Image 1 (cartoon, rainbow, N blue to C red):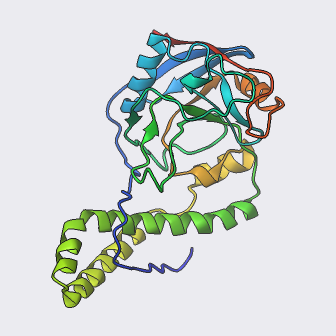
Image 2 (cartoon, rainbow, N blue to C red):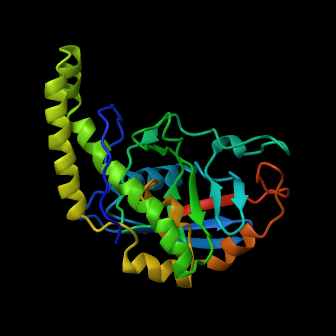
Length: 274
């Protein structure tokens, strides 16, 4: 276990700590996504209700019918859900389309992580989307790769660093008004006192939090594989229930320089299974 070294600088970083533990009481929902490569059954998690409800709504409206898998990266993921991809001409750059809204993040980490078959929402980068809100329609399915324990140990150092920073960012966001008042008043003593208080609180939270990869993550990433570098940053809201072979066929396709399949691969329909 790494020695806790929480650096602290009073700056306003609006990123919230979003590893939320909330069952919500809702039930999972199964949907069948028919593609030109075959059918895939997906499970939508009941404890990511905003994403579940949005996906079901779009499916029932036929929103996904005819959209392409517009971004495919072997041993990483396959992505779809861009309405602009429907009937898009060959070579057109895709990936910016959507229904005109975003979905608030529901990052239930570490319960849900980027193991092979994870269904997650695409989103814009932190620099313009610090709340990590999800695209209103675009999603990806993880194919990933297997890792050795040694490889995971190296990745875990970055993960722990990011988790510690997330704790600090959360505390800074919660104390934003106080920080701004102290700055306006040029109260350096007050800023130093608050810095010491928040630093101590951050250390306490970190000491009570399970940092790094959980046993479940280590087991999954060393056996079936996945994309651990994405953990805790995107909303995982479901998984592949059946049809891994279809996803594997999709990821084997030839792609252009923008990772768009040279031969179109489409979502024919998405049906909610009652």
